[in-house]
Every structure is written in C-alpha cells, then in structure tokens.
Length: 436
Image (cartoon, rainbow, N blue to C red; front, top):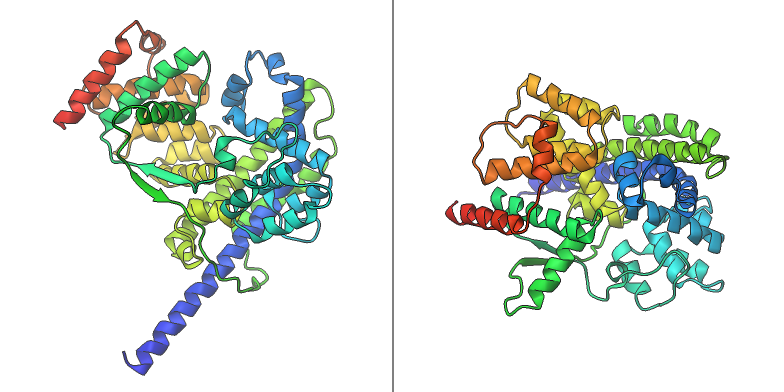
C-alpha cells in the first residue's frame, strides 16, 4: 500500500470513529433526557399495582389491563413498580438512576440489579460499578452477591451464572403456524395470558428431558471493549429526536409533582400520559439507532448489534429496542400503518402484529386503509387471534393474497378448540413443512 493510500485510509477510519462517537453521545443524551420520565412512571406503576386499579377499568387481571390499555406486558408494569420500591428502600439510588447525582444515569435495569445486593455501606461502590460495567458484566457480578429487596425478587433470567444465549434456527412459515397453534393451547391450559418466553421455557425443558435435546445454533453473548474517547457535540447540531424530547419533557414538570397521587382515574391518566411520553421518545430513538446501524456506527463503537448497543451502552431493554427498530424498518413499506403508529393511533404491539399479518409483499391502498381502521378498533387479544388464524390459512391451507380483517363470525369460529384440534393442526403444518 502506498503512503498516500495509507494516509487516506487512516483519515477515513478516524472520520468514521469521530462520527460514531458524536452519534453515540446524541443517543446517550436523548436517553438521559428520557430517563427523567422513569421515576415518576415507576411511582405511578407502583400505585396501580398496589391498588389493583385495573379492576376499576373492568379488567379482572393485570395482564389484560396492560395488554389492552398500555400495549405492554404485565412484567413491564411490575418492573417499574419494583424500581419505585428500590429507590424508596435506597434513596441514594434515586440520583444514580437519572444522573442527577452528577454521574451518568444507570437506568432501570442496572438499578434493579444494584438494589438486590447493595447495603448502606456498599451502595456507592455498586453504583460506581454499575456506571463502569455493562449490564451483562454487572449481572455477572451481582449473581455472586446475593440479597434481594421486597418487590424485586431475583429470577433465573437475572441471576443466571452462565452467559446469555441466543438460540436461532431457520424455519418455514408453516412451522411458525404450528408454533402459534401450540402457544394458543398452552395459554388455554394456563388459564391466562402466558408469555411466549414461558412457553419456550416449557418447550425447552420438555425437550431436554427427552433422549434428543434440541439441536440448535448457539451464539454466546459477550461484552465487547469500547473506545472511551470523549468528543464534544457541536452546538446547534442536534437531531429532531432531541428537539421532540425537550418539547415533551417541558410538560413533564407539570405532571411529575402529582405522580402517583390523586383519585384512581387521575393515577390511571398519569400512567397513560407517561407511557405515551415514553413511547414517543422510544420511537425517535429507534429511528436514530437505525441511522447509526446503517452508517456502521454501532460496529465502530464495538457492538455486534443495535440490541447489544442499546442494552450495554444505553442501559435499555434489548427486546424493547429491537421491537421498535423492527417495526420502524418494516413500516417504511406501509405508509398508512406507519402514520397510525407514529401519531400514536396504534401502539407497538398492534404495529408488530400488523407487520406479521401483512407480510413483506405489496398491499394495495384500499386493503391497507381497511387494516388501519381495524387496528384502531380491535383489541390486541383479538388481533393476536386473527394473526394466528390468518398465518395458518396462508402457510398451511395455501390461501394466497393479502388477507382482509376477519369478520366477527370468522374470528369467533377460529377460537373454537375441540380435543385433538391442536394435534391435527401441528401435524398438518409439519407435513407442509416437510414437503416445502
């Protein structure tokens, strides 16, 4: 390589690194702004959990309430409530969560880990470690520390002594249809809105107890080394996401004083407001992360994926961020559904289900408009049912073309499940997969 070409390569690499660091600091600042919502949201979540306020909305379980009203899982609400209990137990943790103590904000994931092992004497040192370590590294350190606080009971996922594992395998749509049919049966037997994670855990446990354990590709997750150069962001060079965040947070001070205080309706209204605020920031952050990934910034910073960067650098939920990124990318081909999602007419869960139902192919304007109207009116539970039935019809029964929303009669008929129906459905899907 000539001297001139070597100099050009060095300059190009340096410029890419500089641009990556600048984008990283914008993302980190956006998360820092958004984290102000975290503690008041946690306080409201604790009030909802403690008072079982979902019953006043006509829901018999917190699962139904969070799914339909917030388009979140009940685990999401309980984790936020646990964060409030953690900062009540350890007041010194409050400033660390948001960065108000002068350091970098550690966020919810790290705060919950610290709360499990901290004592009056060790809290400061654990907070310092939380700021220095990635979530994976902190989880490994906490796993040997023991201890817990009320409302933050450890789980096997959080304190496992082995590295996290990604399991993946290629499968045709008919196998996904079989999976959804079995998942529906599992939820019926559980008698509630069981998560996909709990179903997979049951499947894996059942398979490992057999003579033929699952044969799947395993990628061991590991922390990566990152350069720590400090680069100032030029003034006046902020992205639209930052401007939107500041406009939204200007309204936060008006709500934060009464967070968790008031009548049941007032507290539920506060919860909805904070969720909407968090949704808006997460949508803009997802757009920023997509740009960072497309530009090569994520790998330049030393992370293998957007999910790894979001969890270990920004302290966010890997799954939540990956869902946001997935739906943002997919809806680029669905302008009308995208508009409903961006304006908040539909939430993340409905948008993800719409992406799965409509698929990657062409959808005419009339059909897309029909689906947008349906998404706004139907429940998440019904949409899940329709997705399962329509996916089975397309991949197993061979129905071609973009499906239309199901009528009430067709939807109710799809809910019927007589003894043996799921076995037959899985067998049919298996035959199609084998012949594909």
